[in-house]
Amino acid sequence: MSDSKRITASKKELLELERGFWTGDEAYYAANVDAECLVAFPQMAQAINNADLAKTATKPNKWRDLQIDLKGIIEPGSDIIMLTYEARAIRENGEHYTALVSTGYVHRVNGWKMMFHSQTPIEVA
Image (cartoon, rainbow, N blue to C red):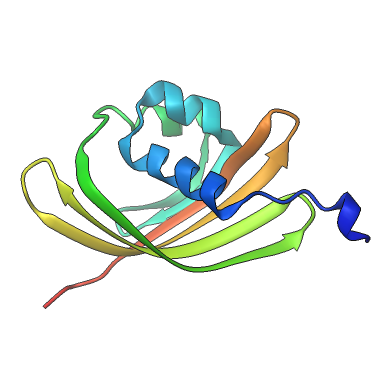
């Protein structure tokens, strides 16, 4: 496939989408999650539809001081992008949180949509 046929998202665009998932509300999730998304958290691992995943975003801005340290991006196909990063943030209650995060996006007619998301908490000494 020639490069002219590849659909590429910029790092900036992807990281802005990611930040939105940390701070966004139900409407943000509904607008930016694919019809179905595979999620993997320590407390939840399942395929979940857009509406049900959006309902989990009940507390927008529950995170502050979000820092994203990008570890890698791959584009296995012209319409799929995967990224991995280390996230550091502070919860509303002041608790520090660090996790290794991976997200997959698929390109649809109306833009990039999250179709996979995984977080593995990292214990910080």
